[in-house]
Image (cartoon, helix red, strand yellow):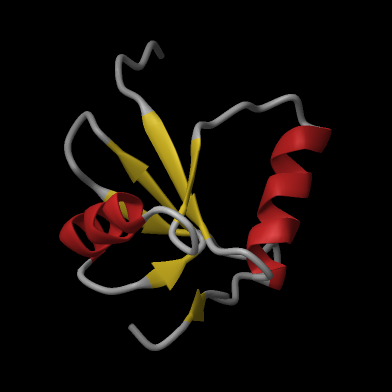
Length: 84
């Protein structure tokens, strides 16, 4: 199945779940552009616009503007958030 959309991974400096996701992607040869909300205010605003809150890791698709929180292999939703 061919897909014609771009993904963006929103991360935050020091987020252990972001590190885990990035390691998994690297180990499996997957490259997704990252936007770090800790150092990029525009990325932070874009994350809030697509996800409704400042919570990472978050993988967003530009094809249909859908947002998916990253789920661990055990099925638990793990996300990091910080005060705005």
